[in-house]
Length: 315
Image (cartoon, rainbow, N blue to C red):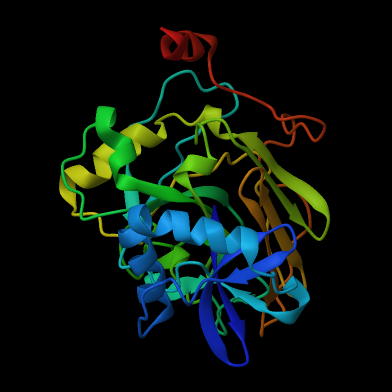
């Protein structure tokens, strides 16, 4: 099932995304005050609600997408945990240590929204990172890799918009501040429930900037796979329903985002997310791909995972 939050007549409601449009499920979902609380209540009660939601999705007439506005399926997660790197790239042959940072929950925007670059000068280029987002069900603490599915509700698409360049640690050490401007976390268009995705480490991720294909990779290339990410995060933190783990990106194809551009992301099996970019300062960088120019394969999904890593997985 693909769950969404949608706006119609100035009201935000939960729905199920179908090929025909959106089916309103407000009559089944618990009434809650905020959009985030609406989705969290569905996550918490999904086992009991699932049959009724499925019946509604199959029997009720869908509202065409051009008559609604899709909102981020998680409007303000209590935690957004993002992996640092986490993909086999170029000629790399040893996995880097797993690490994460926290991204500002107020950075979340949804389909059709606008990424707004800061209205003051910083010595950074602003770039895209297209990632798989793991939507959590909690409370979950100390979850083992063997039991990872117990803490996973579903999956979504996420763009980690990033300030990258000199002095990013000036306001505070690490990567957090350059990634946490308001609007720097587009997510959506939906949450595909876990039963829709057989293996989160076998998904095709693509990203276009004004029609130019930049990211084109498979989540099989993660250095540290989804079960390990859940174990790592829950070892330190209590994971709550509606929290998000973002799995990192393959940096091959990385490039700038700038004023007037359209960013489009597709995770096959989940959905397509499109946003605009606005820059009040009208900064300009040379358009194109900045990393992995010699290794980006625009015709097929390139895998960089070392053969020994594939063999280890198979055994």
